[in-house]
Length: 236
Image (spheres, rainbow, N blue to C red):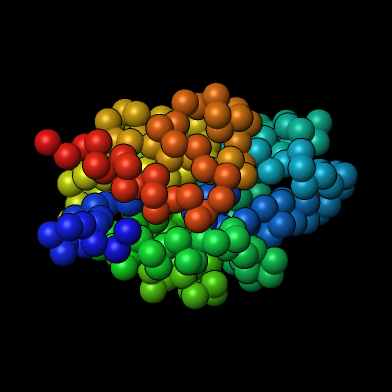
């Protein structure tokens, strides 16, 4: 699958955008660990990892609000920013204690690069935090850009986030793919008219299958073939 019959790299010119948390990296242990630290600081009981995993994906503020709601301590708007600041301070120092790429992720990304694709991270995580995580896990080398929540006009599911990410690597939406795990990724892809691949193992309150992706993958070794099939379908 490395090249087509004309000798051209099979994914030459493709722009493949990836969500980060729950798609590339299993960050739940460190994110929920920090959320539970914050809850404990406020005298509240911790949340089980399985219960809190779906709260990830819309940014830390939303996760904090959703976490405190689940802990029966809903927040007033004025409470969110101070808690967010404390969360970020703590999380920055523990960003990759237990977070790891999902099995097969690195190999799949290397395959896509070898086939000529340009890769970009399109995440509702802040850009600085995203880069710090990718650096810690030796993933930065595989991406041409990282577009976090603060590097786009609006965050997913707004299509401008995905459009900004594709533009950042010189890509064309007509040969782009969004790879994610949740409704925010699905919403951005559909609004931007970009094909959608979802992973079945991520963080989502709505089952990934119910979000009607073009492909649903259970393992990363399925990703290169799915990208090829979608981009072949886009060819004139």
